Structures are given as C-alpha cells and as structure tokens.
Length: 291
Length: 133
Image (cartoon, rainbow over all chains, first blue to last red; front, side):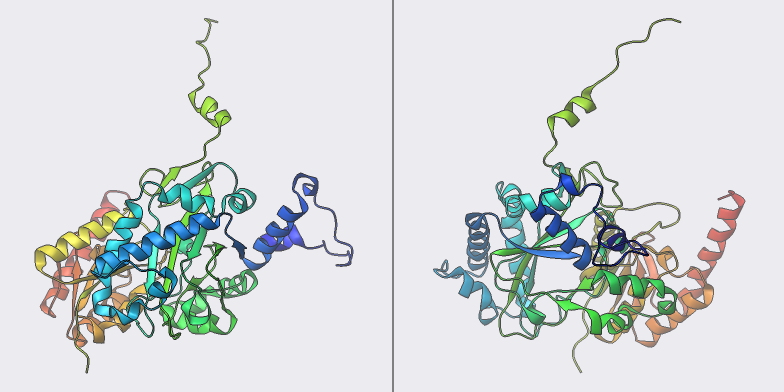
C-alpha cells in the first residue's frame, strides 16, 4: 500500500463512498487537508504566491541583472524582456549571463526570506513550520530550441537529496508546455519503480521514453509557485515554445527530519527554528548526585 | 558535422572507495583537474544513488559524438564488473574521446592505458580484501 493510499483511501472492504475519518482530521483545517490530499495524490501543488510584491521584486532584480550583464538598458517591461532574451543572446553566449544573474541573485541579502515568503503557508502545511532551506537559490534559463541546458529525467532523491525535501519551483515568466518542466505522477512512479530491474544497463533516455506517455508538463503562470516532491521523476526537454523560460528552484525540508548527502551547513541552513527547539538544544540536565 | 567540444563532468551520489564525497566537492576536484589539464569543462551529471546503476554514465557515453570526453570525479566510479568497464573503454576510444579520473589525475587516452587502470582496479580489490573491508 502506498503512502497516498494509506492516507487518502478507504481500507479494503469499505465502499469508496464511505471513507473513514482520519485520526488526525480534526487537527487540520479543511483547506489544509485539501492541499495535503492534492499533494499526496499528485505529488505537487501549484498555488498563487502569497506575496505578489515579493515575486515582482525578484523578477525585476533578475531582469535588471540580465540587462546589466548584456550591457543593455534596464528594461521597462521585465516580463517581455525576459521572455525575449533570446533576441539578445544565443546559447553560446548565455552562460556568462546566467552566472552573472545567479551571482546577483544570491548576493542579495533579501532574496532567501523573500523567496520563502512566496509560499510560507503552503510550506507550513506540507512540510512544517520549522524549516531548513537550501543556501543557494538556483536559476534555470532555457532559450527556445536550445538543447544545451537540459536536465535529463531524474529524482533528486536518486542524486543525494533526502526524500524528506520538497522543491519550490518559481517561474519568472509564464511557463507552459515544453517551456515548463515535466513530472511523473506518484502512481506511475510506483509502477516504474516496481519494474526497475528492466532498466539495468540502459541510459536515462530509455527511462524517459518509458515514462514519456505518463508525464505531465505543468502549466505554471507567473505569480504562482509549484511545490513538488523531488522523489518523483522530473526534468525538462527542449523548449519548443517561442519564449525563453526563466525559473528558480530551491529545496526546503523540516529542519529536524533526516538529511542525506545534501547536508546541514554546506547545503541547507535552518531558517525558522522555534523557541522550544532552541531551549531544548541548549538544555542540559543539572549534575548528577553520588549514589 | 558539428564541432565537438568539452569534457562532461560526472559525479557520484554514492560512496567512492568507501568514502562519501559531497557533490560540490567532487565538482571542485573536477574543475581543478580540467583547469590544470586545459580541458574545457562541461557541467556535471550525477549518477543515481542506487547501487550498480550506471544510467547516467550510459547517457554520457551516448553524448560522446558531440563532446571530447568525460571528466569523472574518480576512475573508481567505473562499473565494478570488468566486462562493463571494458565496454566503457571501447565506447570512449571508439569515439576518439578520452576518459579522465580527476581524483587520480590520470585517465584513458589510448588503449595502452587500459592495462594500467585495470591493474589498479585489481590491486584495489586485493588490498580491500586483505584489509578486511
């Protein structure tokens, strides 16, 4: 029985029309429970960002940084500028721009808490309210028809990430069809993993061909954020749309849940430790008495 | 035919010779090696964490017609089975490419290098057994 089934379905012998009441149902508000159910069923949620000014501040900072890197005037219309950056730079010239923008982004001392505020309530519901956040926010730029920035199919949990992490994926332009990323739903992931041995000796393209009919290219407009389980297979393909993709991603996890290769300090930092945890970490029992 | 350029980095998500190496450290080692050897570095791919899995290495081998070679963190990331390693050597040399182990600072640029790498693998196996690992 999968995690999703164990939480969302009726047990054997009961009609689906008569779901049992979960033992913890009273602890979540109905809208929280709905978000949890969607996340467990689909492996992701797409939610409106909780602070529009925050996403516009990040988007504008990226656009200005890109314009500076290209020695162009600062754009009046950042959305159009980012979508059409391929008119200013080709695939070969893109990497210095990418590096300059990443440096400008992660050099902004306001970036990480601003990013967190985009999805604070969603993370509280799906992950917890005492969080660790990836130290560097990643940026992905994909020009139309450029095959040099592709991420082949993978699950981050296969690459050294803890299965307790989620990815917060934030578009800086409207992302749709091949301009977006694809994700394999949990039910299909379970089927593929059940027959994993058949991929022995094959490459990642063979794996993609096996999952291709089942993946979903997610429509994620600017002003929304995608939160997904990076235990699910995902990646991107050549952007066949006439606009450039600009997206950011960053991992979050419960601060006290298990870590994998991406460890506390070097990859993650605690961001919202609560007073009880601070007191607990600092607490020492008084000295013992002699027996 | 398009121009071939660069050496694809290849990093591990599991132990290499019994040690865990953070991926960013692996990338530092690869970048340093490529800089010293004047090999244009291409962004690394990470092998999956499942034991015995070489799907990403296979994908990089498929890429050989478009790149000059592979810069792996360590030659000890090659498959444990000798026949699988031999197949990798043949793919690399057959494509006119080269394979480098950044940690060891050496690699496979011609068929003459195969025996040296294989001897190292064989000795590693014996010394690990002798040490009781």
